[in-house]
Length: 395
Image (tube, rainbow, N blue to C red; front, side):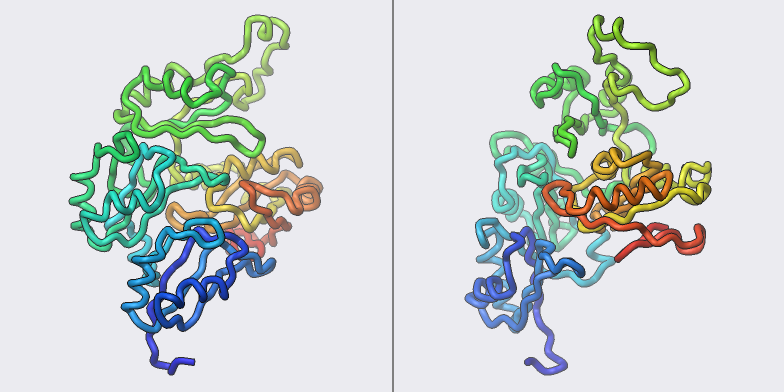
């Protein structure tokens, strides 16, 4: 063991398979130089790997060699992602020197993205957003050690070719959005003729230049899409023309009973196309529901279920959809640290019977290929600490 005053050099190792152990990582990294310790981060209760680890080197030079030689190499069949461990939370969350790269061709790898930007400065980390199947979502992030390097890369790389198509590069905003105008839209309840990426993208392109586009499938195998336009006018035109479009045939309209006018829910037979809300806006909307009596702060019969071990890419819509068959959901929430999911969430039901049904039925259920853990959240007096359950709470 090293002495009390020893300062180790720590590397973060991410994108690991669940079966990668401390011994496997020790064997891989110790070939670069003397490793002091290895820690695979695990779920507190199940002890299943969370997919990332920390490797501590005794010498700075050995850590730098590992970062240079092992980054993006395969460990147990999956490329790992290595970066210097940054224990300063203010610097880590500020987004300084961080760029968002969109319109990535789906075959572009982490290594290729890194190499494309490396000429402009020292890179701290590269991350391509992936869905649960490991397929690129078409965008990623490049963070430089220095803001000046990021500024140069932004100027040089915006519009550059990568993987056979032009990428767009923006300063990372941490999810903030201008209050005037919008460029991102969210679409769901797509008709049959718009169920393919090519068909929907072609229709949206009629409104203006598309910066990025992604189509995904939710836990109930329903397609939804996110589209970013270059100009707010194009996004507004798409919403105006497409939202509320009736997806039914004339025969279906004639055979179905008229819509109940007292039901204020958006009809499932209509195309939904609206501005994509930021996480901050969704949180503000939720707080407004509490004040208006729509959340658990006013209705003390509501019962909240605590859901942990969530995949980082699970959305609040997916969480709601995974539980809606068990009862009436008043809200679903996934707490965030900036843009990063904290790995747990809450689903609130109208009564205890529905919540108990959810806990019993969802035991062992998978969302995005990851088995979740479910329990009734401990309820505190509202306004004095909010709610809590297991390892986290909502306030």
